[in-house]
Image 1 (cartoon, rainbow, N blue to C red):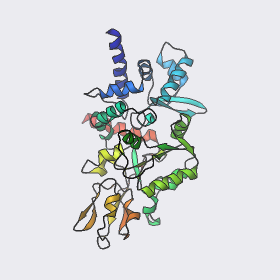
Image 2 (cartoon, rainbow, N blue to C red):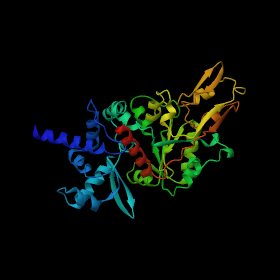
Image 3 (spheres, rainbow, N blue to C red):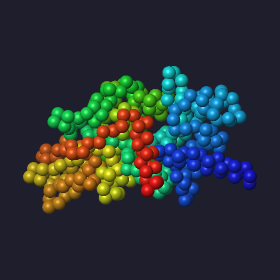
Image 4 (cartoon, rainbow, N blue to C red):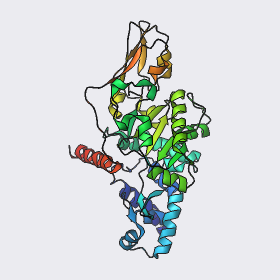
Length: 365
C-alpha cells in the first residue's frame, strides 16, 4: 500500500507543479487529470518533471538543481525519452538541447499525435469539458489569433506582416514542417469524418516548433514553397487559419468547426468573439445578397444566419477568418477592420506573461 501511495503522490505532486504555470493543470473531480499524466509519464519521469520549469534550461543546470540520484548522462537519456513520448519539449540553443515542461495545450496533447489511444482521448475530452476548459479559456487571452485568408483581403486593408499569411511564413527562417491535424485524427479514431476536408496533413510549424517535430518524427519537413502551397489548399477547403498569438509565430493551425477542439468548444458560447484574437469581422451588403446561403455553409463558427431571406453576420460570433468573402457568388461580403486593433505580443514568452498576469488578477478579485 505504501508504494502505491508513493506512486500516486508522484503524479499529484507533478499536477500541482504544472498548475503553477500560465496554462495550469487544475485538479479534476473525476481523476481525469491523473489519468492523463499517467499516459504521459511513468512515476520516475513524473518526479523528474517536477524538477523542470516551463522555461528552457540546459541539462547541466537541471541536473545541478534537481538533486536526483542519477548522473548527468542518465538524466539526459531520461529527458530525451520523455521528449519522445511528447511529455516535455526542448529547443536548440547554440547547438545544445534546452529542456522544459510543456503545457497540456498547446503542447503535450498535440505531441501525442502518434500515441493516441481511445482511453487518452476520452480523458482529454472529459478534462477539457470541465476543469481544464475553464483554465484554458478563463483569462480570455487566446494562444491563437485569427489570420484572414488571403482571398478576403485587399490592399486597402494595409495588413501588418503578422496578419499577412505569405509574409508570416516567408519572414520565418525555418525550417518548416507539415503536421497531421490531431483533432481530425482523433475524430477519425472515433469513427467520425471531417465535414470540411478529407486531408489530414493541414497543420503547419516553423522555426523552433518545426525543429522539434522534424527531429522527433512527428511531422514531414517541407520547404517554404511547399508550405505556402499547403496553406493555399487549406484556404480552398475553407479551413480557418489560427496562428500562434505572437508576432514571432511558430505555428499555423488550419481548423474546422466539426473537429477542432477550440472551435467546437467556443462556438457553444453566445459571444464567441470574446475568446479569439481577431482584428476583423465580415459584413454583408443586404442589397447585393440574394440569400443563396453559401456563406452560411462555409462559416465554421456559425456566425451567419438567414433573416428575411438575406444573410446576416452576428458580430458577437464572427472571428474574421474571411472564408465567406471569396465564396460569395454575388461578391456581397467584405472583411472590415475593427476600430480597436489588438497588436499581439512579440514573443511566446510575452504572451504567456500576459496570460499569467491576467490569471493572477482574476484570482485576486
